[in-house]
Image (cartoon, rainbow, N blue to C red; front, side):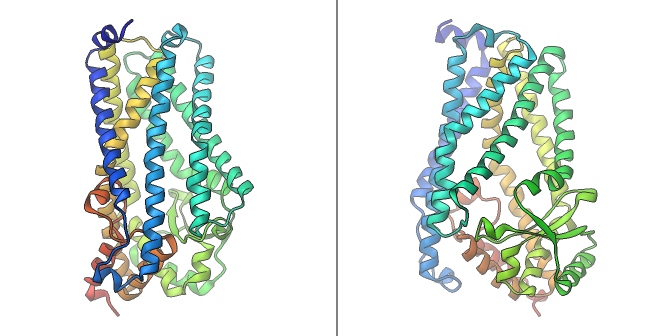
Length: 410
């Protein structure tokens, strides 16, 4: 089948793939240009909170990571495209095959993708992080962790792709509806089980020993009307100099996790300020809302894939699943700015609620400054970059927004 005949045979889905591919490429080009233009801010307002040395280091770090991220995306989709082209040469991949054989092919695909991207992952996570003093890992420790992440990704991806293929084979009319139901169950189950089974693969957790801090945290959660579950400390300092705290889990697996270096480097008042922000996410049910939005997006994407399958008039095959997988990843990337917009709004709401819960917006501003310095955040990105990739409002926006919360200032 020549190229012209193939496009004619598959109809609109091929044109649709070309269009969304072009949109993704345009987004990556814009991000690439924005990354090249990153530089230390010279704004007087920014210099009130951050010194030139930090701003230059943060700009260099974010430029390096953003450029590497663009290349990672390009390499990922290029690899998928080349692999899909090679699939066209093997007829058994374009017809129905044994489920076990299909699973093996999907596993080999994810494994090959891991090996292909490993050098770039090493550059991003090890070379750049060490260059800017953010990582404490040895090479062997980093590789062991990267391997664990890869194994998890390969297991989940292989199961997902094989499951979709099996549903296409045995439930050709309703495969996409069943797939949605399975993925919804998986998302809910993952939010419950990951804190118990998966997180301990990467961190060691111990209960918080500081009774005074524990009491202060529970006062905040009680004021917010949130059940905190357990409060655990993660041994993050053996891997990173970045600091963090977060809520995770649902139901009985709900817990507050605090990085040990957050406890070591900051005062109790500052730690409570960070925790209050996370508590606010639970107060306003942001986790549940994100799950609902994610499910809604998944339903739309699976419907599009169902329509594409019908438009291509192809039988269930490994090749078809790969085409739809590429379409899924491209559509998901295009919709990122929409989900990021919602995420930024949630973060603003959490900042406001945190200031109200602690009654101390001054400490919140000081903590935002310290978090930015610790994590080498780029504090004042362009509006375009913010729209395309930022899940949180830039630090300067958060600082200005917090300072407007005068009623909560002690």
